[in-house]
Amino acid sequence: MEKKETLFIAFSTQKGGVGKTTLTVLAASYLHYVKGYNVAVVDCDYPQFSIADMRRRDVEQVMKDNHYKRMAHVQFTAIGKNAWQVEECSSVDAIAKAEQLQTDGELDFIFFDLPGTMNAAGVVKTLASMDYIFVPITADRVVLESTLQFATTLHDNLITTGKSNIKSLQLVWNMVDGREKSDLYHAYDHAIEELGLQVMETVLPDSKRFRREMTGGHKPVFRSTLFPVDKSLLKGSNIEELVTEFCQIVKR
Image 1 (spheres, one colour):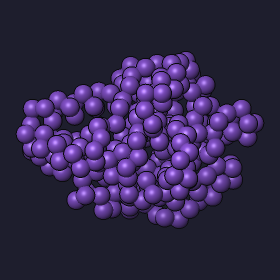
Image 2 (cartoon, one colour; image 1 turned 90 degrees about the horizontal axis):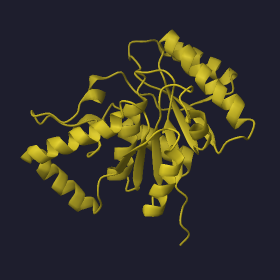
Image 3 (tube, one colour; image 1 turned 90 degrees about the vertical axis):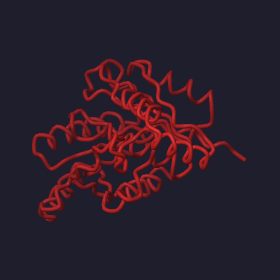
Image 4 (cartoon, one colour; image 1 turned 135 degrees about the vertical axis):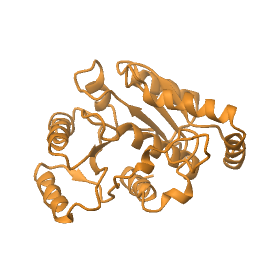
């Protein structure tokens, strides 16, 4: 049986607070723990290394809390593999780190969490090495303008010129307030398409559940590097729909 190539994926943008790190974690965990893919994450978002830091918090919580310890035992026994691996490095060394991870084991996806600026050393070169880039956007005008500039720059300078490995760049609406008029988003989508950019059909709601991590109160977990979204929180989050559309786009 022919081995599938490992795909390099980034949820990336140059605007902070739009959800690139959260979406990276949610996608990685759902693909690895629920869909059965083998996933790793390269965290090069210096200096905070948010995903690596989240993994440390998750492991600490599991080690000290019997409730989560039992959850982890049941899950990892059922799936027959360990948690997805996360490695810290600089954006300059990101591709070398990913290639090292490839040689250590068979991986379907390696996700990259990059700094929120194209000016950081190595970011543009690393983005050019991605197979697929997903760009979170929100309806905030300042965020939208900045994000579209980022996406257009990648599209015009890397994708259409053939100077990259990028097969597709997709925008994804995140933090969408259900009270906002749908025709507003249709207008935005039309303007985005005029720029030659593509938008995913899946829309992610603005919901506090996206920030819910493991707590001493043992409430259902949404965002975790060790567990997928709890089934009781999945409905209405559109995470399952996002991953399904993601797999269609990347042809996996």
